[in-house]
Length: 161
Image (cartoon, rainbow, N blue to C red; front, side, top):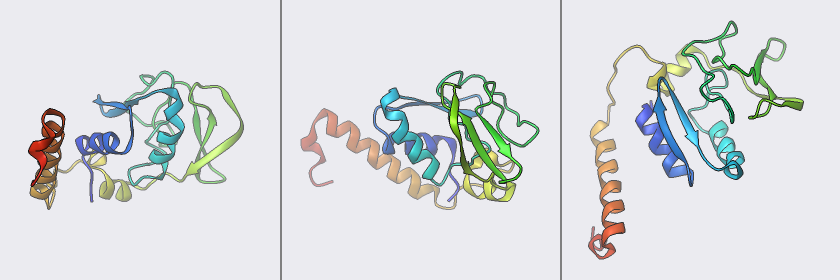
């Protein structure tokens, strides 16, 4: 199903520990301890919402970002951590998250087409197609919120729910 930015934030909160995320100016920033970055990055790359061209893995100058794509269709990065390899037809990281050169380039996959992006995330759409099962999503979020509040306040209230 298509995922909205606010559901993407909930996905990160559920899948990652000790993460802080904010949707800011057309992008979503994840903040976490450096020791957790490798596990979080692996999850992000293997998940259903990763696009090598429009999802950037950065550890420094996350604000070196513009709401535009470069000449190869990649998300702008002031530190040029990744490039589009025309021979491989894939996005290749040439620098680490701190913008230091890697020993070997690391290919992360081909950029997704506009049609693929439309089906996976509303961030990449221009239309306003509503969720088909919006009620179910809201019921699940409400239930999780109730459990979190009641479980922290008085766990006995959860019994039988």
